Each structure stands twice: as C-alpha cells, then as structure tokens.
Figure 1 (cartoon, one colour):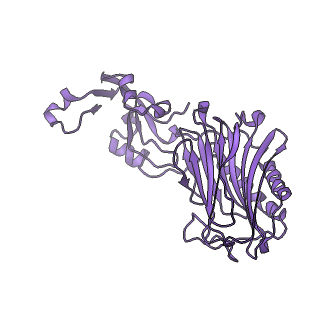
Figure 2 (tube, rainbow, N blue to C red):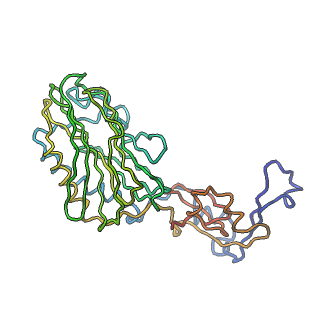
Figure 3 (cartoon, rainbow, N blue to C red):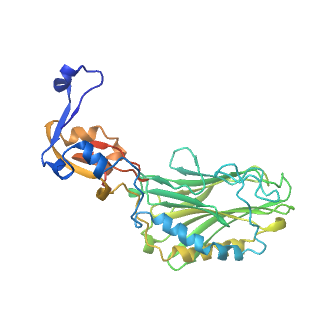
Length: 353
C-alpha cells in the first residue's frame, strides 16, 4: 500500500490526512522473493540498464550509416582539409589546424520558444515531449543530425545554430548558398555560409532540412529560414529554423573545409548532400523516443482506498500525462538513457502513445 500525505504532518495524523491511498491485490511479491528488498536486490537492481532495442534508437542507425559514407563525402571536395578536434572539451574546435578557427564550431539546437542548448559532440540528446533526437559526430566532415517527429505538430519551429571565431580575422571573402536537392521521394533544402580567400583553411557551414511524405509521412516545414546570418568572415553566428509545425523530418549541419582558403562551390555542397541522401533513402521513419521498457521494470495494478485516476493525473504536468497510465505502481522505471528510479507511485510510466 502507498499513502500520499502532505509534508510536515505528524505520524498520528498520516491516515486521516492522506489524500491518496492505494494497494496491490495480486500477491506479485511472491514471484520476487517475497519482499521489496529482494525485488530490488535480485530482480530489478537500481543500476543503469543499457539499451538493447535497436529499433528504438533509429538515430544511431543513421549515424552509423553516415560514418560509413564519410570518406566518400570527403572525396567529393578536392583538397578537403582534415581539421583537428582540438578543443579542451567536446563542445568546440579550438584551432583546428593551420589557424582554421579561433574557437569555433560551437553547435546549438532549439525547440520552439526554448533557449538554445549547446551540443556536446557525440552525446545524444532526446526530448520525448517533442519527439526530438539529436546526435553529432566527430567525423570528416563533422555532422550533426536532428530527427524531429513533433507529435500532433504542436511545436511551431526547430532550429540549429553555430557560433565561431575564425582564423580569417576579418580578411578574405564570404558567400551564401540556398537551394534544394531531391532524390527519389526525398527532398533536402539547404542554407550554406562560406568563408574563403585567405591562407587559412576555408569554412563551409551547411545546414539542411530533409523530408519525405511517402517514406516518413512528413509534414514538411513551411519555411527553412535564416534565423541569424553573418555578413563577415569572423565572429560568425549562423542559425536556421524549420517552421510551420513540421513533423517527421530530419535537420542537420555539416562542416566542410578546403586547404589554403580554397572556395567550396555550391555544386560541391549539393554533391555532398546528394550523397548523404543515399544514406537517408533506405531508412524508414525513425521510431519516437520512449521510456517503454516493461521487460526491464515491473508495473503492478492497484485498487484505491482514497482517490481515483483523475486525482492521480492531476499531479502530473499536462504535457507528461500522455506518457503515463494511472492505477499502477511501477517499480524500477527507466528513463530514456537507462537510469533507474525506485518507483513511480500511482502510474505506469512506461507507455508512449
């Protein structure tokens, strides 16, 4: 049995002051050693559980495919500069080699009206409410990919931003490209900002948004716009935004470069995107991120002495209610990264609909 009692109530008043009381009725502990101690020590220990279901982590499958094709992308850019990942942490490139940067390639993402969040390279980010999964790869070229399902289309916009100090130090030239490429049932729109024309390696930031109504059941962005755009060769702050309540689409960012400040042409940008699209085409719609891992936790139904389903749900934030089912106690629920909690009182928190 579990009671919900307000804070600071003295023990003799717990029963009368409790506003929820519910209990299990099926004798489930007899299958788990007879006690909660044995249940947690032997059957559901409070340790991290690594993900076993490859279908759930579709973004990683895309990342693996991009990794395999990365050498082909490099070969599409003559004199591609193999920059170094020499930042003191995994959130930027310090110099990159040959004075390509003075602290650059700081990547951020944005969901709706939230503030920008800086990305740590090779760390996966998941937002279950908005169906967002993001991952970056320290490849040549550097790649960030962000899958957006946006259930019910409730969020209007999604963005990526890159902030960089360049080695050009306000010398050289800058140039922007915008356009789209299509292959089969897949369309990718792009925005690119390019710094070139000095002895330093050139920089080409390529932002893209890909969708397919047929393959992914996409609701395409109504606009893929420059939310912030530079007009110089140093202190770059470039950002793009996919707008119009889009659903089931892929956003991304590529960092291209050539030695000796050689310009990267728009044809080369398009060639790289077209080659990447061959990776995306065979991949079906990426499953939404979930916490549905019932084989690694235990949800037991309860009966109420005090309270009801509505009262349980009234204590759950509105945006989270779709992820839970009332009238349960859930033992060792796991978050999307596999971190355990002892229990969810009153709800089964492993569902996603």
